[in-house]
Length: 132
Image (cartoon, rainbow, N blue to C red; front, side, top):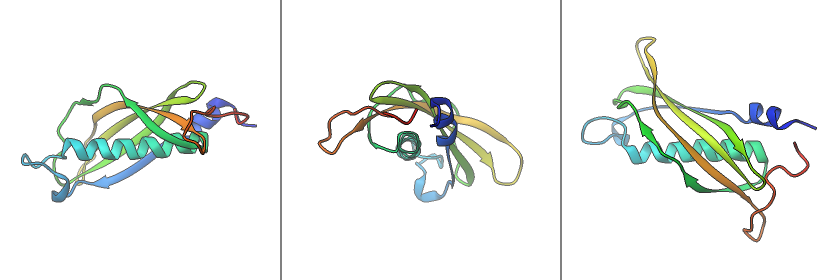
């Protein structure tokens, strides 16, 4: 049986996207709402891979938009479990922006998303019972 540490390591999730005009705001940078949607998606995948249960987002912590992400860049979203409770887990998500035509890469956005595992009646259930 895998340890919690092994489950955390195996569940790290990475998604790459290109920033196209249909995802930008009037400043030609990635729209904040799009960034949040992508962060929720990658954190959901990470929490699901960790628990192999039905999970729902129950909260987000402070989201830091540290750098603008211009149109025409590549972004990488990296999600990793940072805390495990009885029925919940917390996922840290970082968005890295990467210039398409150079090696320039830096963190642009980061935040935490909390998930709770739910049973078929949508009631909280142990997040890793018997797996960790």
